[in-house]
Image (tube, rainbow, N blue to C red):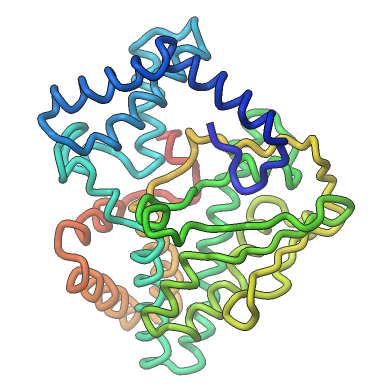
Length: 337
């Protein structure tokens, strides 16, 4: 469905692709689409069926694109995708559990930033420069794990670990909260070849760091995160964070000798995109793993303080979602479980 960050299609191409997708899922046109949404509202006894409607669209598109797949196989694959996407009904109160069933929708870029900022505050207050070094090490560990999962999926599919593949296997899209508030990520491609350069002019993470008064934490986090993700994917890719919005008017990312062209397919594999409950849990446990390793018992206590801060801010239910990922192995693709 999505093209990810980098979309080189012309206007007519976009229109054609959207038309093909719509005809695939809603063969009866707009009336068909309205009937589906209306039926969901009727069956679920609720007006907001956005989450369930997206679930229906994803499953229907999957079954149409893979006609040999049985309905049960489609359900099984979607269930695996929902688990890796942070939408596991066991973690979210049931497939159609009303507000509880859509609990992951409460997680966003801002909740992720809250965790990052809490770690930075406690680490620097308790350990000074050692804490800052541990923070950077934890962020890089988190990024490397993300990049490695992307590479694992690409290798499984027989794809080359180049930058185009990196774009297709990204694990996130802007949250619903960011989209609704008009703060979703905005990126402009200024060069494709030989060096691929992109400028980010709107970033929900940057805004959250500013709003939470965590500017220093944000500057350090953003200075190394994207490079760490790329290193985890393929260290031979010459990806560099040139500047970030914490110091300039936009973020600039440059990939030297990228191998990208205007024809490079960058459509994101939406089945591997994760909800922000997964991203928040991964952030908490990845940084925490390094904190505990470095500071031992004191680090364990500090991790508890971070989760306590999160619970005080967002409530026990959301904190329990984070706790439910305690046994998750973030080094490997979760859909392999």
